[in-house]
Image (cartoon, rainbow, N blue to C red):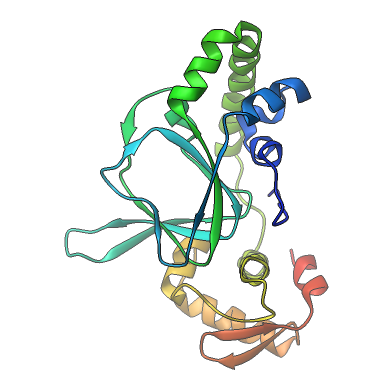
Length: 228
């Protein structure tokens, strides 16, 4: 996953998105001219269900949860967007509506590229348009390969990465988890009980310190990064 400093540039944002990654530096700089920057405070919505989905959104710094509302009014977690993640690749090419909500879990900066600006650029820069088609072809091949691969990282490794990302996003060594354990479990593909056990294990290994039930301190970031 790509990482960005607080002083990210438009080019940094563009290079995080797989369909742009193999473009030339000149093409990346051209696409970067379309980028707009937005800042959201913790709790603010980046987009809501029913909104027109007409922009690619790239998280330059921070963290947001993407969720749907069930018929009984409860939130159903879908995924977490962290620094370097993006949402809405397909919106650059087709009109749609957001079927979910994205809510900032901390102060979050995003870069956006609108479909209208992107389509106009494609029409005025034929060479770039051809490069984009080739990049999309490579992206489809990559996605097909990914569907046949089983993730090899352990739950403990994914949890360690989540704790590091959250600490970095909040810029705090001592931090309160912005999500409930059941939502973290959904994001990491496990159960709340496993999350509790793994947090206890990481504490016993001296990698983190448990301050309260949902407040932790990173003690050894290097060893957390090494978990596989």
